[in-house]
Length: 236
Ligand SMILES: Nc1ncnc2c1ncn2[C@@H]1O[C@H](COP(=O)(O)OP(=O)(O)OP(=O)(O)O)[C@@H](O)[C@H]1O
Ligand SMILES: [Mg+2]
Image (spheres, rainbow, N blue to C red):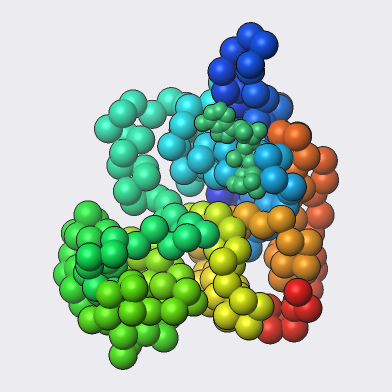
């Protein structure tokens, strides 16, 4: 089984002494390539901390993490930057778009970092997420669901093997959220891409190939769905 992410005894402690917060405690996690994985847990359970580790945004306190075949704790600064640039796409709850740039400009900004014809690749991505007719709109002129589509286009335009989404539907109504989840899941189906989506909503776990549950920084359960549900059939 080829793994997209492998964490061994992964531990992250913020602060020290009496004020230390144990955000991840010796977490062992294996995520096979090509899966849509949901990371489930209550607020404060360590979900974002784990994503930040996979994205090489922070160094672990102890233990190890590898992703995309690279041991992330082994990388020097340049290699970490290169990894973040080419190997992972990020999608956030509140979209994080640049308000003074149009939809296409927001996507191009990231496309340019990885070379090639940034304009045409950005256009293609926006078409793919159903926003071909909104490319020149500013984020403030788009609905929440449309803004999240722009952010998905931005996350995918680098064609990263790993896509990390932190509560991507947290600010959306049920119907729009289902559309966004369908879109995310379509980007993995049949492909080599792996998606890790964070949620605290147990209903969303039904569409995942694999569910990893965190509690107080510990992995308390892993289960797989042999026949994941269709996002439009969720009842949430
Ligand atoms: N930079 C930081 N400095 C100190 N403590 C932190 C930092 N980041 C996270 N923590 C703490 O680590 C624990 C896990 O936080 P994390 O953000 O991973 O939780 P989460 O599962 O993503 O929660 P939520 O669902 O609310 O987003 C929390 O107790 C949090 O306060
Ligand atoms: Mg979080």
